[in-house]
Length: 167
Image (cartoon, rainbow, N blue to C red; front, side):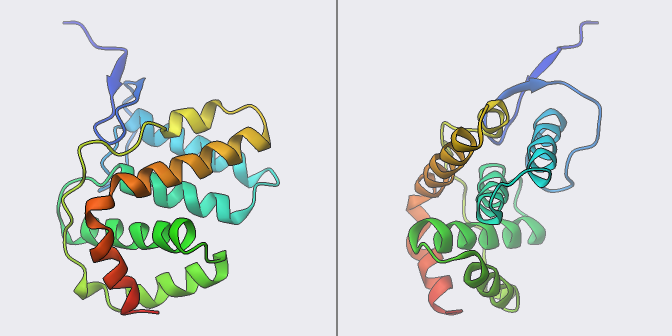
């Protein structure tokens, strides 16, 4: 029996190592992709990367890997799409965004499942991982967050309505 060395992530489409480590319990990523995400976040905590860049990474990754419909994934996708809306679309600062997300979580029962788009952006966490400089890293993260936000455009009005109820 042959074991594939690489596997395609169902969330972002990246070809990643087929590893047997655990993945997130509801994020729709294979273990190899989840591992790369952890490495990116780990690398950032030891650098001068701005926290707003980390916020974009967390939000973009979560909605690029929405998983399957459940109460947890519905809440996760909604909150991370709101994060992208506040940061990318409204260009709110990090503190304002985080405070609005906290308020949104108080109304999580109003969220409902949004069918994920087939294409969720061409940039992935593997591209972010390969960046060589701070400047390249931040530029790629900004592009990625914008791509992922745009990929969910069929749901923008719903997300804006959710946002209006918490602002």
